[in-house]
Image (cartoon, rainbow, N blue to C red; front, side):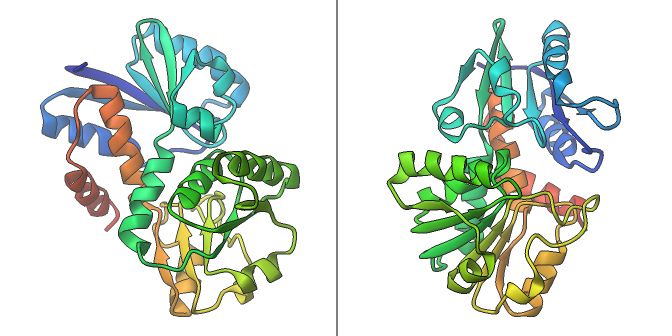
Length: 283
């Protein structure tokens, strides 16, 4: 179905720096459709994820076409939805909700977004053993993408060990026993790893720092990041200084938006134009 006008929004905490509204609106202009994209920032509104039911109802009443969902709401949103795509159900996290015919349908475009970036930026890297930092909503999507892209063993570390364990169990049901495990010894896992992926918010402008101690990095590792503001996090800067191959969070940010644009508008956007627009905003 083609939507000639789109009213979309992003619900999350601390999202003032988000590039998503500009990405969607710019591509809407290029496609000749009226496309408005609003930020619904829980921090600015002094709300938390308990406000999600009210915000969803308000969006429906105001005829929103759909919503993107980001930290910290990607899992909290699920009980409030009518349907989930197969991918969103498998991952257990939603970053895109289509509001249509009185129904709320949850999708996950993070998984596809990360996989596209990984194929483009690190398509030929070793995948025997990978360390992933973070087991939240974005982490669940990235872990699915990594195993689907052929990572043999994924060690997941999270501040809440039980969350890493739950994600590893979910992944092993999908991909086979032993493909994922909750990590508890980071130095050993890092010493054995081919690659490191950060899916925590650590490294964002508002949350500076590194998800792993710099002394655990070494030149043979490849390092991928999902944070994109700034595009060069402290982790990536440290990794590049050691000669690591790296992937910044920009491609995932763009390709999850490409798919969300298509879900909201019914039009396949020009991915290359969206990538170029993203990079023009970051230089």
